[in-house]
Image 1: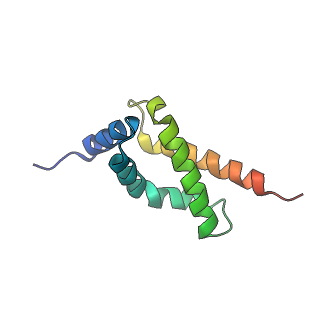
Image 2 (image 1 turned 45 degrees about the horizontal axis):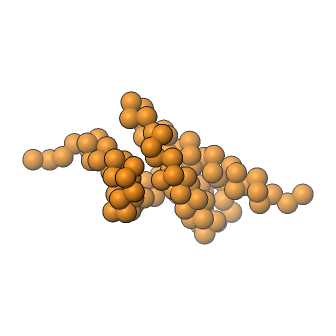
Length: 95
């Protein structure tokens, strides 16, 4: 029997809520490419983008319990990554 991708995502999120490291690692791996695409728009290079991704996922794991299961996870994740990237960009601006 094939598991529904949405079911798998829900189980991963539930695992992250209880701080299961395997679930966190799998969620990170599953959404790394999407996050990299977002962060590269704001970063100077891939190394900087990776730093932003890591900061973003710290926020995701810190606030995963506030995620609303009635809304798409990807939208929630994108918003966090975008805001983290903007914050990082602002903090590195030189006047």
